[in-house]
Amino acid sequence: MMRCCLYLSLLASAAGCGRCCDGPPVAPAAAAACCEIDRGRAIAFLADEKTANAPWPLFGGSVFRNMANTVDKNIPIEWSLEEGKQKNIKWIATVGQNCYGGPVVAGGKVIVGTTNDNPRDPAIKGRRAVLMAFRESDGQFLWQIAHEYPPDEIFREAISSGLVSTPVIDGDRLYYVTPACEVIAATMDGKIVWRFDMMKELKVVPFHCGNCSPLVAGNLLVLITSNGVGEEHKVASPKAPSFLALDKNDGKVVWQSNLPGDEIIEGQWSNPSLARVNGQDQVIFPGGDAYLYGLELATGKLIWKMNCQPERDPKGEDRDKLNYFVSTAVVHGHRAYIGLGHAPETGRSTPFSHFLCVDITKKGDVSPKTLDHNDPANKGSALVWSYGGPIKPTPKKGRRVRFGSTMGTCALHDGLVYITEERGYFYCLDAQTGEKYWDYDFRSSIWGSPYYVDGKVYVGSEDAEVVVFEHGKKLKILARNDMGEQIHTTPVAANGVLYVTTRGKLVAIAEKK
Image (cartoon, rainbow, N blue to C red; front, side, top):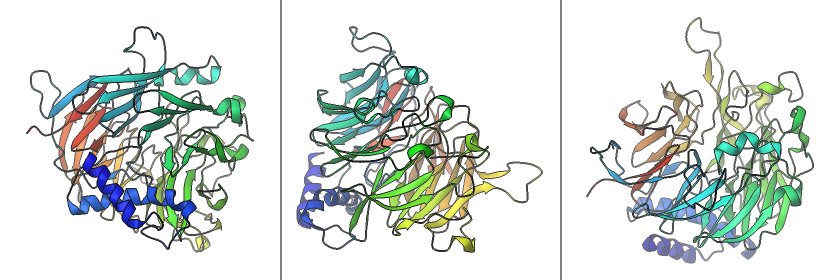
């Protein structure tokens, strides 16, 4: 771990903190954010040199949010949790009865968000949203931070979910969002440094709960506020910000934006990503109005926006059937990749959806007229390609759509994009063209994302399995691993160990030496 951190520091020093690897020199004021981007690329550099494993300190591993780990090697394909027949199990820790946040790994700790159904502290009783930390080496429980739910009816549906925000670890601090929309800064020893109440200070009203997995860029903590609809399916607080940047040191507001305004379709469940385009740092926000936004990192000013549901009237009769974003945009080069969908178990049912590739170099309103990338009407838009929609002509048998609602964030590696669908389909697409190479039907819901590491792709399902696929243009299943409980998160690897969270367990998987 120290070797990896030292190497990253040396790379940043060599860059002089004054330029970014894919752009011209930047002003000193932007250097911190620039180095934050360099850090992600430095991890890839380490992988090329075959030197070290690396931490996984935030959702997506880096500010680009790509669910691809090009560093870690020797990750097991097969394992068993069966008592007396355990195979490649390093340790198992008990969490609550639901686990949606994390895991993240850094500083010798593995941290997850969960519930208080298996209390670690007998003095803390009842329903709580809990952040738990375990020792990376052996799974020993270290500490927890427990948060109460407000009595407001808004939160009733979310109480059983626990803490759904995946924290971001930044040095000796970590940051996350509670269900009550408090932004928390804490030490890696579990001591709260500051908190910022978005409901009180910004009049944010969430749809069920706060949920964002923030990112750190220089001195900024950037997040989506979770502002959403209330009674009668109308936005309860349309003037409240949806996009927010705080000073990570003291929690003070640096800038805010309410761009989606009263056009939010339901909730806002996504997370921001970071990019550097033409020498300018931009943060990419998937909005609750199904627009993708690019904002200046330093100021929050709009650079570009793209309507990702251009053929549907958000105020029309089909409003309840509109898709929006639950997944997070993955930045690769000057493109962003993201799928549309909706939150599960909310009564919504959209007939089909799309997965999009977007050009993030443009400015202004760059919305397409349709989601057909071959449509001449889309000339000049930011749409590079899309995959999805209904199959035409409609087949008499079998599936009638190319792609359905997704909650997953894609994994992109070697020109291939892997993406899951909530209904259980898993796809391998060409990153340049959107051509489908293959798909696979899990016949079980998938809430998490695919995860590339060590030449394999790992996918967890509600059917309690982690299926391991060989990376490539041809479908090949390498193994099926029974976890014994439903999986609602994404498997992640750090420092040579694969971590899988089920509803009630955190499992560390590694080859026995």
